[in-house]
Length: 349
Image 1 (cartoon, rainbow, N blue to C red):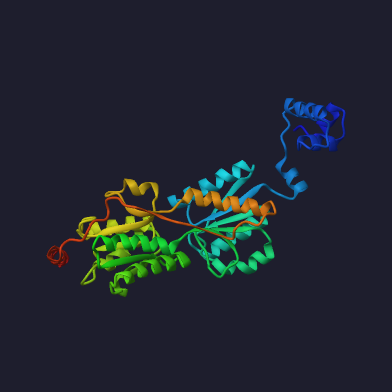
Image 2 (cartoon, one colour; image 1 turned 30 degrees about the vertical axis):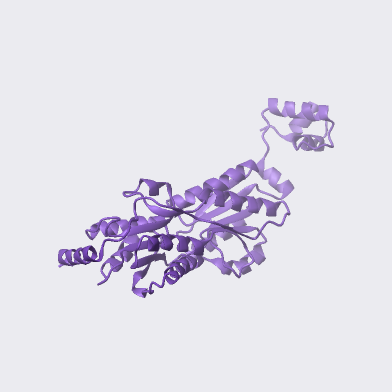
């Protein structure tokens, strides 16, 4: 491998002059700098990332923790992070925690031990427990899609309360009164705030809250199927359902079909995320669009501001957008609803 010593010998200059020239330092004469860079290119010199990190005390890497690489939501988040990271000459290290707080903490600790320059955590299951770790590590951490109002940590998230409000209002405006909420038991603050938005929309029109209409899964489709089945087994089941995310909505739609119901005529469903798959579902899913790629970009931008010594905004909240598709319609008439319930009861007898 070609070293700085080899280039210095060929250019007849000192090692420090070569090092400065390769960093485009103004301390080196422009003609000398051009000659050194030309020699380096001709000899196939490549900067040693390890050597450079020893000099500037940075590794030019970012650690990213996500719940699962199988979740399309995370793919778009990471895409936005990578777009910004590449413009700064940084690489990403990726870890998954599968919604396990202990695995999440271990992943963050592992990144710290690898001397990454910053860490981004999507959909954190740990939250304020990071405070003592942050004090010890002194490595900037940005949270995406999770925020605790009393925390002083940096985060980029959607306005979850407003998202729940928009989704439920849409169902109310269609005429639904029996509206269920399918939450995420691992959703922490996001679940709490979306549920609060759901409750607020019901209160706006004096629709009585029924705790029987609230169930929780784990954010995935399979678990959402069993949670939805519990709702559909009620004596007076919901005619509409607001789901924590699109993946849960897919599971809910599957459960409805397995119970002999049609989407949306028997059960209207609203998700949250607007994954690419949502527009290709059958029927296409009505959902709240999260600006996932932009959230990743903003989180990475916040991190690089911190690395540059600036003071970025601590809490960035973005507005979701209601995307109306084919999975929501007005409820059947009372007579039709009663008839449907009797048919369903007979089918299960």
